[in-house]
Length: 470
Ligand SMILES: *Cc1c(COP(=O)(O)O)cnc(C)c1O
Image (spheres, rainbow, N blue to C red):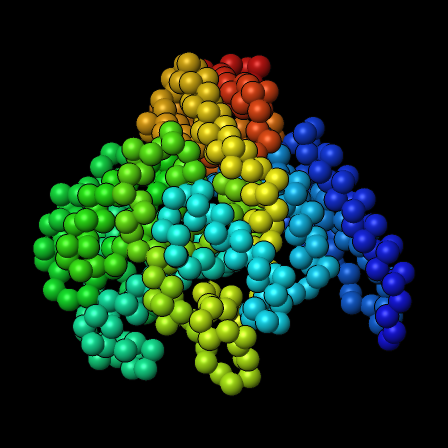
């Protein structure tokens, strides 16, 4: 097969057209997939043809087949999980990442990609007030960013008791204790599992889900040997931040490594509004966050920050002879993450930050929190609605009375399709959980969301009364 420039033209134009149609449909489209998976699978049940299909035709067909089953995650009325949308500059930059097809592992081999990611990393450290000499790695997401921080910590605390985990593994190693707040995110549990560290010892949390320093202090007192402490910046249900300065001090006094899971909440550090809530954040040893959540770059991109670059390089650097290094001193992109081959996913981060600027990034984060506050206020005014958390960031957890009622209101809301929000459980109760993480959510979206919840609530109330109109 021979390369001809025109081979790319039509498929790319088709893709741009389909992308624009999709994006243009977001403001008016119901916020749910139109068809369920079974219908889509049936429609897509095509055999792999014997003969090739024209590339432009493939793209057009793909867009047509996918459309009924796409979830409008980029809609300003999508409030499910913590997802984030896509800033225009980040999306366009992501297309370039695919066109450039750089395997960003080594600085000398893909210098532009490495340089852009290094700049993006420096901007992030500056914005979030993290130690300027930290290593920054771009991972697939928060789960792997947690994995990176905890892997660096595992190596460091074992090294401090004379054990080389890279050489000798965990078999026969000194027992390593992991302490985590009771509301630790499940991805941290996964990362610990990948690391062979098993389940952490849970430390009691307060009613907002924040780790309790008194309980942490007691837990640390009974630890004998190497220890990792996992803190959280941004609780999924309350948005709350663990008390950083005191927790880190207690952990460091006990010789522990402190990792902070800030998948969506770490971005609060960009704004002085959360300076008190996050006081002491910079004293931890490693931090994980996502760019595909609060920063609104397309999937996927997580960010792993480790204060001591040697600790993360020790965990991930592969000293194989075919990886020619241009400079013995500088960390290679592949030294900072689990992957060797990978997409230059830090480039959309660069584009997002460059397009927002410092003030735009702060405004983005504060705007999400403002919208969450407005939503909570609107919902609290509805009959029988209880906002269960102190709304301190982007998350709102709501009950409609009994668990049964809350589940039914959530179902009615999702069927309605004006907005999308997640059902969840928090502190023993069914909740409707709202996450404001899309850059484009505005006052109208907030009003539409409150109206949609009011409609769902009214429908369930009417059904409970046996109202024949429902
Ligand atoms: C989303 C999330 C994670 C996991 O991040 P992924 O990008 O989904 O891997 C970890 N911690 C918290 C608090 C999260 O919200």
